[in-house]
Amino acid sequence: MEDALKTAIQDVPDFPQAGVVFKDLSPVWANPNLRAKAVSAVAEWIQSTGSTPTAIAGIESRGFLMGISLADRLNVPFVALRKAGKLPGPTVSESYELEYGTAVLECQVGAFDSSDEVLIHDDVLATGGTAAAGAALVNRSGAQLWGFSFLMSLNVLNGSERLQAKCPAARFHSLLSV
Ligand code: AMP
Image (tube, rainbow, N blue to C red):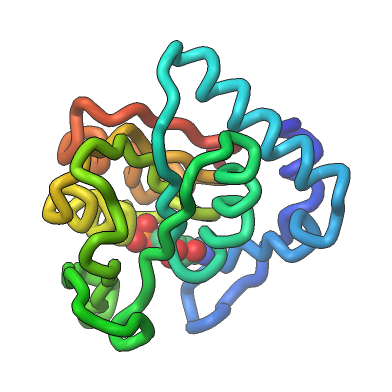
């Protein structure tokens, strides 16, 4: 699985800005066999924990792609965590730091039940700021954070350490770490 992902994912230097090496997962989305294997691998990890999330929250926008497939596989609701201004209100908002400036992530009020245990999914974990904002939205919505799942994490930015320091009780999984 890791080798197949490594081969498929393309490094794009200086995109979307100078100094960033963008991880292009388009070849993963384009390959039905690889997509299915990736979803199965995440589902196997979930099963190995002995516990199951009751909802998947996908981060806009590439977290929606596998997030929906995962929610289908587990037969649980999917909640979209979106960038500012995209969701009809009322919403809960959380701002977070980007390398340059700040961004806002939102979910709709009532998107989660208070009994929900939520798995946050995104394609790439870099600094962890976006996923941490997602965790804050889950908590402020009155639900519980079950864990985090990523297709790939970038070790150099220490996102997994930062996330685990902020959310020590959350389960953590990344199919690929580079
Ligand atoms: P961060 O908040 O720094 O962990 O950034 C994670 C978010 O930015 C995710 O939604 C990713 O899709 C995106 N992202 C950050 N860095 C990269 C990268 N090098 N390649 C692709 N996507 C990235």
